Amino acid sequence: MHPPPWAPTLVGDGVTLRAHASADEEDVLALGRDPLTQRWTVVPVPYERRHAQEWLAGRREAWQAGTGYYFAIELDGRFAGGVDLTPRGESGMGVGYALAPWARGRGLTGRALRLLLPWAFETFSPEVVLWSAIAGNWASRRVAWSVGFRVEGTVRGYEEQRGIRLDGWIGSLRREDPMLPAHPWLDPPVLTGRGVVLRAHRPDDVTAMTQACNDPATQHWLAQLPTPYTRDDARAHLEEIAEEQAAGRAVFWAVTDPQHDRLIGEIGLWGIARGEARSGELGYWTHPSVRGRRLTTEAVRLVSRYGLLSRAEGGLDLHRTVIRAAEGNAASQRVAAGAGYTPTGRDRQAQLLRDGAVEDLLRYDLVRGDLAGDDVPPGDLPATVRTPACRRLG
Image 1 (cartoon, helix red, strand yellow):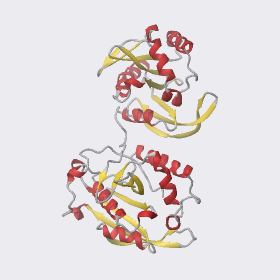
Image 2 (cartoon, rainbow, N blue to C red; image 1 turned 45 degrees about the vertical axis):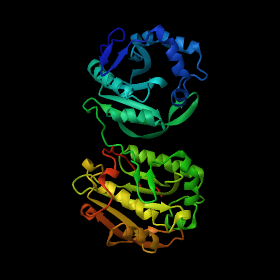
Image 3 (cartoon, rainbow, N blue to C red; image 1 turned 45 degrees about the horizontal axis):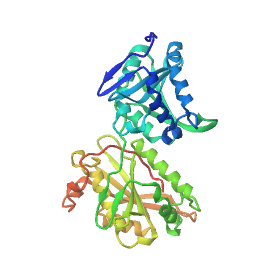
Image 4 (cartoon, rainbow, N blue to C red; image 1 turned 120 degrees about the vertical axis):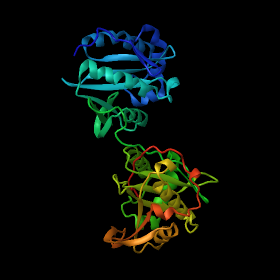
């Protein structure tokens, strides 16, 4: 490795990376006091002026000692954050970044990494650059994903923050990897139909979710649900949904009442297959307060159409969607039939119920050609789709 004696200036795509300077003190102080910075990084709390001064004073020393290579991100002539590289053995490096609150939401960190990482591979010749973050830092993960890092998983107690061990995510970017997303990340688009609006889940859905998942009928047919189902279980479910969507495996929606925007159910599309025979499976549950109003049927119709439409039309470009319903679950079977699904067979002894009984699952499917004559115009769906992740989580 032959780094320059001090940080060079890298310029491109509307962003500048440069050496830190004493004039950055006020902005470094503001960044260190930002609540999100304190939530997701290891800065001291409280963050005092002396911390900013000491940190700036140590950047050149760290660079020259080879313990860390730090750049300030500059935007419009102002310090906007920082990116850094740290050696990880003979042929690896770690990357870190933080952005000032005023500069967020502009794609700036991704642009900074697209400047930094090619320079790092050329200058240091590492085989791999590693990214890590405290689990739950979705903003950091989305940036890493956008420039090609592959998230390898969650490591328990990987990160230490002010004396506390926290679970961490870790990802990698190898020298030969393109700096493009390695897989899609699906954000559920808003879908509007007769009497329902489908949107992404929110933290304030926890109360209605907890009520619905403690309902005896829901508990009977979804035996994998904890009992009792607590608010912590609902929060964990939301994290699982976020993980699946970030990994590009499926997508989930909160089914809501359009008048009050209250959660009245959930629907998911998962198991999205790659290759020519692309397919996905739908699952759903309904809050007991709205059963019998055909709202779940409408939600299934919306999601099925979204899945089967081509990407040019704003869909996921699937060829087939599948619903499986327990033989005794007449309500779920009515939903499938009402949404236009065709019975195609059964999976014997495939569903464990809460009382310990095991039932066959009846299988229904819908293929792209079945959309002919659908009365919902393509314009009701988004023109573009970014790819997600999700699985059946109850």
